[in-house]
Length: 99
Image (cartoon, rainbow, N blue to C red; front, side, top):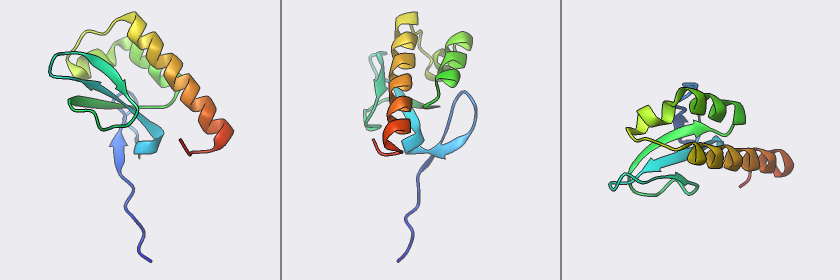
């Protein structure tokens, strides 16, 4: 049986290529609203970031997502993203790579 191709995405912070399951998508809608996209299917401009709390902290310190999405994000959004990524990382360690 033929192997299926695994979709890869590039992390905007580290530049690493990883599978979509190992990344989280941040999306900016046409109205300029920035949100976390767990399904990866919301319409709008998207940027992928690794599910690693240290990488999210680096993005927060250097405001990398602000530049890549061309939007201004609050500290509350970065804190929400950090909490979400920490939770997802803990789930992966507990249950494996399944969501």
